[in-house]
Length: 498
Ligand code: FAD
Image 1 (tube, rainbow, N blue to C red):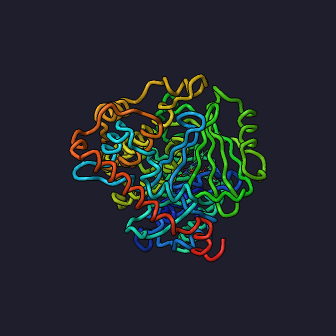
Image 2: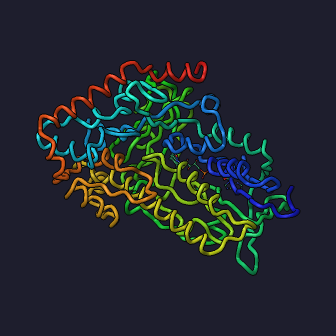
Image 3: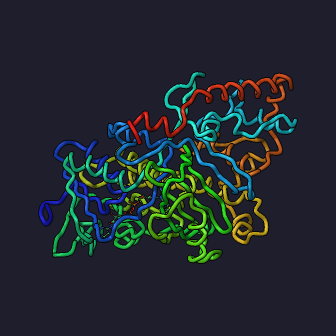
């Protein structure tokens, strides 16, 4: 209903962020809560965002979406990690695989033993000690405990539009009202400065107590109407454009995302059941749009489906994600480029943080907003540091873009992390930081960041035992991978024919 009593929650925008928000509110708010979502088919969505991280299980699980149904509906596939090809230098490849690498011994995480073994010339590449990477590189997939009793954490690749459609069905079935129309004006309350209503074409008005800005890069509510500033991170993450095009499957059904470094950026390759998603992320200072499109089209595994679609962005985040009675989610909250597939996760974590402190009548105490904004800032900045690491620690010398990112100034928080690693082989992860020590370890090692030291407790292990430990770890993992079915066969069996 428009133009009448205010809704409890009004969601502006129906991309992945908007429908995730609608589904979660529909599932978790008390009966009788009135929720509206306004979106415009004429404007459409950003139309990318196909790779996720394992935390998506919590979101889907909380909604009660059955996994096989979800994979069928979204044409999804499994993802065991991300392969970074050419990021260190042309021809080199490493994986940020989900799950453990090696195993801890005594008080020490595996990295110290590996660093010692590396100095002794005994260490193999990390791949040999990662169950997920061994499975991924041999195109295999397994769900549940392996023969060796290990879990293999995994995420999904999926068609974002189909995921939004699934969530829309979920939300509408549970009473969310979808309003089609273009938001032309955001009306503010004269006294409080909060948002009072969205004005749509045709004199329609959608009034509400609390608003979610899910309008994508436009940030109509948090940015345009409320004037919340934007922290520009282009000095750390200088890519500012992408061009995307799906192509026909080329038979190479990888259970991992590929991120392939190129002359002035990198290309993603995301296999779905019905197509492969591709895009080139680049810096417009270093590559023209025409060159970018030509590079993308030249590097596809199959026939392109349509014309390459350009996307412009500025990396960074809104200075405040929650202002007054408005919370920004998705691209309206900011964007850090898709390198480690974190955007959808950031929507999910913001929703769960909101639900934890949901205001009863739309009015949140400043302490609640401050807490939310502080947590969000911490989460975003630590993810940013992790992304910056991929760029700065490259050895692609002589290529202007890569030379630039190798020499750019770094955030202090990243400098501190790198110092700890270089000096002591130690990785510090603060509470609630998204990426784990093992994730950092893989990227630090993969990007060739040398650690001068490691914990001397690792020296307590006799060299022969160190050698045996590494060999046994590797052999046990290789044996566990052998009986695993191929990814495509597993998926087809699981969902009943892909
Ligand atoms: P959009 O999809 O842009 O949705 C905005 C909504 O607002 C639309 O419904 C639109 O119609 C509506 N709207 C806007 N203005 C108006 C108006 N005036 N009136 C009415 N409605 C309006 N994330 C990942 O997790 N993994 C990835 O692999 C990944 N890859 C990405 C690659 C690129 C190049 C980019 C740019 C992003 C990527 N992302 C990825 C991010 C991901 O796409 C987004 O986080 C996610 O899709 C959420 O987008 P959104 O809903 O915020 O915005």
